[in-house]
Length: 350
Ligand SMILES: Cc1cc2nc3c(=O)[nH]c(=O)nc-3n(C[C@H](O)[C@H](O)[C@H](O)COP(=O)(O)OP(=O)(O)OC[C@H]3O[C@@H](n4cnc5c(N)ncnc54)[C@H](O)[C@@H]3O)c2cc1C
Image 1: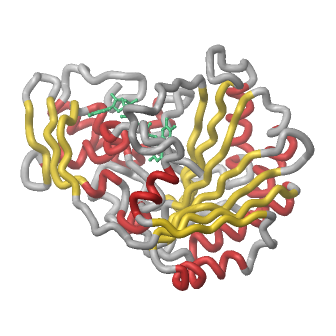
Image 2 (image 1 turned 120 degrees about the horizontal axis):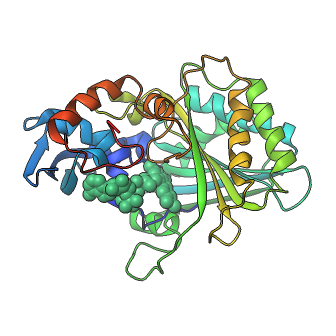
């Protein structure tokens, strides 16, 4: 499990900003107290709950369409003294992976405390009809409390094939999660040629057994032979006491407060350079529909605007990213950015 230190605060805070500590504290955009924003007419304004509050609402979820944020002021928190990074790993049949994921989803919904940041990291070994699945994350608290928190999940899944659990101080935990470290001035620049999709599973209608099975059967059958280099992350956003879900739905432009688990399906060309393999789009799209095709046709899933999917039609990205906030975003956009200076294919009002 690694998180990249190179992700910039500008985009990250503008569309969401999820980390393993988000169930404890909220998204990065939830920490914003105020921002300085350069508008399309060249003026610099402050946005906060008391100044240009409509703009402040809009930039917490759709900032790139509204201006250039040159400064954020954020709430801060005392660093937790004990941060337990854990991974339980399996390489199993698609059927067993389905039952592990099903236990993960049940635990996510009913039992996971907000001090637990958790994701399922999914892939395949190079050959065979197998699935690798790792339940991994950070617990912000003591070892004793971690055991109490995680045991209801462990009781429902098979014995892991490997386990790694270590306690860190705050900064060390960030270094470990950052993989290549936190000093972005010495991390070599990288680039990727990729296609990604997201799927936000709503809390009130989680995935059915049929859709979980269909997804893992697809992964088991197609994953090893794909000529892309791919991964799937299923991040726990919601569940009991999650600070992401605790924010009232209309408090910010971010529209996925009812999201339980956010899937990121991500495939790169094998050497990360162009061209993207011609069958790569179908590989990811079929992975996505392996889930949605087994859910009711009116399933109200969402998508995470930070994980842009360029293949969504206008009506789809408007609905899936922004839901019923889209109309309000368009009207605030007409006030602050009427001349389409901040335009891109999925910009508000485009
Ligand atoms: C490898 C990788 C891992 C990721 N992991 C996570 C994760 O764990 N959690 C998560 O929530 N997201 C994650 N993301 C998604 C990430 O949050 C978004 O891609 C985000 O938009 C990145 O912001 P950026 O400023 O680095 O990107 P950029 O590509 O520079 O910007 C993205 C958009 O934001 C706009 N923008 C940038 N800065 C500003 C600013 N100051 N004011 C206004 N608009 C601005 C840009 O114009 C562009 O439209 C990941 C992305 C990558 C590539």
